[in-house]
Image 1 (cartoon, rainbow, N blue to C red):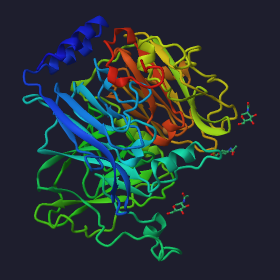
Image 2: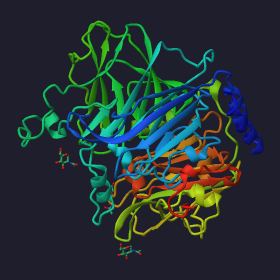
Image 3: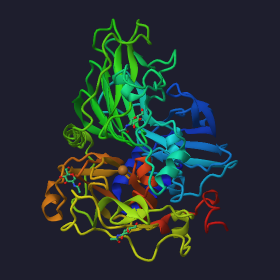
Image 4: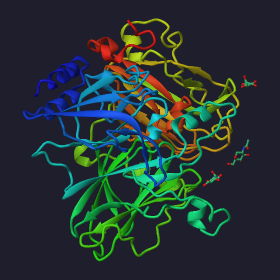
Length: 581
Ligand SMILES: *[C@@H]1O[C@H](CO)[C@@H](O)[C@H](O)[C@H]1NC(C)=O
Ligand SMILES: *[C@@H]1O[C@H](CO)[C@@H](O)[C@H](O)[C@H]1NC(C)=O
Ligand SMILES: *[C@@H]1O[C@H](CO)[C@@H](O)[C@H](O)[C@H]1NC(C)=O
Ligand SMILES: [Cu+2]
C-alpha cells in the first residue's frame, strides 16, 4: 500500500526539493488505504432553499458526500456523467496532485470534459492532512451545486498543535434560482446581463429563501405577494453540542460570487487551520471567508446550555441583497430545531473593508511549530494587474491585458505532445504591466485581448506573484479570491486599500519569517496581495479568481512546469480538440 509514495520521493530528488521529499516520507504509512467512491452525476429537482429548482447532484445529493481519508491514502472516484446534454469534470480543490497532474479535473487544462454517458476515474493520493473540497470545473457548472468537502485526517498517533473532541464540516454556499445557462449566457452577452446577487445563502446545503427587502421590512411594497418561505421551511440544524466539549469546525466556502462573514452567536472561535496549514491561533468573533478558502476553527460549548444559538452566514464586500443564512447550534437536551430566543444576527457592515483586510493579515502567520521555511528570494517575479475590460463588445476580466479562454485541447496534452496551434503559444503573456503609469483608481480605458496563453516556469524555480487590484468599469473595486492549482503558496503580504504595489518599495514588507501557506488568497479592493511558490510539481496548473462568473469571464491564467517530467498521460483525459488520436 505504500508503493504510491515511491515516485513522490524520486520526483522530489529530481527537482532538488527536499521539503517535498520529507513530507512524502512523513506520510509513508504501512496502512495507507484506498477509498473507492462511485458517483452518478445527474440533474434532480432539489429544494435547497425551499424553492424547487434543478441542481447537479452526486448520487442524488447536493452538496455531495464529504470524502474522508487519512494522510497518505489514495482516493479513487469513478464519475459517471448522467447529465445527458452537459459535460462535466471534477476538481479536487487543495489536493496538489503530485505525480497525478492529469487528475486535477480542470477541463481545458488537465483533461477533456467527461461527455454525457461517459465514465471517468480520478485516482490521487491525499498527501497532506487538512480541509479541502471538490467541485465541478467545467463552464459555470459549480453554481448548480456540484460540490462537497474532502477531509484528510492525520494518521493515528500524529499530534496536531491543538486539541478537540470532535469535528464537524460547515460548507457555505450561495444559491441562484436561475440556471447555469441563464447565468453564463448573460455574462457572455452584449450588453452583459449580470448574474445578480444570489437568492439565498446555504449552510451545509440548506437555506430559506426570502427576498432581502421583505426580510428587513415584511410590510414593504410587494412583500405580501412576494414568495415567502414555504410552510415548514425553517433554519436547519447545524449540530448538537455537548456542554464543555470543544469542536473543530471545518468551515469552507464554495460560494460562486459572495464573500462571507460566518459567526456563531455568543461563541468565539479560534482559527487553527487555513487551507490545510496550521496557523498561529487567532481568536475571532466572526470569520471572513472567501470562495475557495477553508478554515478550521475551535469552538467550545461553554455558553448557557438551556437554549440554542444562531449560526449565521452574511454577504460582505458586495451590497447586501440576500437574506443572511441561519442555522441552529443546539445544546444537548434542547429541541435541535427550536429557534434561539434572540433576534437573528445582522452581521457586519457589508462595505467596511478594513476588518476584512485586518483579519486576512492576522491569519497569514504560520503556527510557530509548523513554519515551512520560505525561499529567501524569487527566481522570477510576476506583477499581475487585474482589470475589467471591454473586448470585442463584451465585458471580460483580464490579467495584464489578457483574458483567458480555455482551449478545446487540454494544455497538459498539447504541451506534453507538442501539438502546435492548440493554444496561443506564439508570444508569452506579459509578466508585468506599466505599474508606474497605471491608475488603479480609475475605470480602465484600454481594451484587452482574449487568448489561451501559458506562463512557462522553470521546474524547481521560486516564483513571486503580486496581484494588483483596480477599479472595474463601474468604478468599483471587488474582492477576488485567487486559487492556485497544484501548489500551495506562502502569503507574503497584503497591501493597503488604494496603495499601488511598488516593486522597489514594497518587497521589504514581505513576511519571510513565518508566512502561512495557502492555496486561495483574497485580493482586497484597490489592494495588492503578494505570494511565493516553488514550481516543483510537473504539470499544467490553473491560477484563477474563484468567483465563478469572473473565471468564466477570463480571470485566470495557466502555469506550466516540467511537463517533460510528467509520465505517460492516461488516454482517458484525451479525445477532444486536437487530442483525438
Ligand atoms: C435586490 O433583489 C430584488 C429581488 O429580491 C431585486 O428586485 C432588486 O433589483 C435587487 N437589487 C439590487 C441592488 O441588486
Ligand atoms: C475598445 O473597443 C471598443 C469596441 O468594443 C472600441 O469602440 C474602442 O475604440 C476600443 N478602444 C481602444 C483604445 O482601442
Ligand atoms: C470613481 O469613484 C471615485 C470615488 O470612489 C471618484 O472620486 C471618481 O471621480 C470616480 N470616477 C469616475 C470616472 O466616475
Ligand atoms: Cu474575481
